[in-house]
Image (spheres, rainbow, N blue to C red):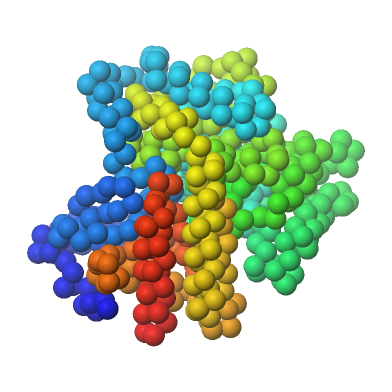
Length: 466
Ligand SMILES: Cc1ncc(COP(=O)(O)O)c(C=O)c1O
């Protein structure tokens, strides 16, 4: 059973703070997507705790920013040690952790893709996207980009221009360099009876159409060159609803890009760092990117660091010289130290095997829930990047209200599973905002997965009765 009155689950202190928030905080961020915003007090492992000590299993981990779990002892220890030794340093000077972190990232790209390159750090994901755009513009001298419908690359102005949702751009006027958006192979909704091969073929055909004749406005039939500088892709769409593409799709897409002189930019901000079972999600698809963008989980949610890796020919000092781009907090030592600790944790264990096994286990449980609840239209996933698409009882028509209700019931907490009472921290994504994107800690235990599945089952039952 669950208590229905969410105000009963709030302490007086939370209520006081929420009253202040109403007065002093902007509502321009995403806090008020929730009907009853929640104040959390503490975090550990897979759980968040409110100020009454009630626990909430987090199945979204700060949008895949805390892949190794909250308050990871080794990563926290690295941060403490850095605070005691070299907590601050302007980015114009060098420090050991920056160099060693760049080395580890370059080595991971060499292992994953067999490519040599360099790393350039920044602070947030969208800033790193902007740096990638600069490298593309500098290299190709072109400012038009290709990107996907359902793609998300951040909210700064240039990142918004290659993010498909017009909702994010409309209030801010003209975007002269808005990308050209192509359909992503979203098999469940592509209209080919859920057949991945036909979906892949159709999406590739759509891309090829751009180069069918010279009047498509996309290329010069004499030089063979495209007007587009780069294609910005996510291997698995994150905010777009954890859509996993058909296996052969990216290889064919990248071949067309190469033929037309279009750079292939792999945005790993959300799917990188073993979220899908590989260090870089694009490693699943046998493609060699020109640029990789990373952020979020590099520091496991501690001091932010983002960045780009680019092939040597695109970023060597002759073409990308001193001062090409800069931000005050880029490569801050607290961030590089935690990033280095994260990379060392990954080196200490076979995360690929671990994440793939847990992902299969979780997905198996989601499939059982799907067979029980007609409103779960689709479940899928790669590693621990999982999706559950909420629909009407026909299993197809998107049901956003149902996903919203589930989100709020989880956040209200107080779900009595028999073995204890929990809340569930969920996230909603997808083209129709009806997909529960399931993004647990990579360290989640099988017992916690079972608890999450039990809670999800309960939440779907409550939400569909409402
Ligand atoms: C794939 C992807 N790229 C870029 C970004 C932007 O990162 P940030 O929010 O740190 O600016 C995000 C954020 O969710 C993302 O998921």
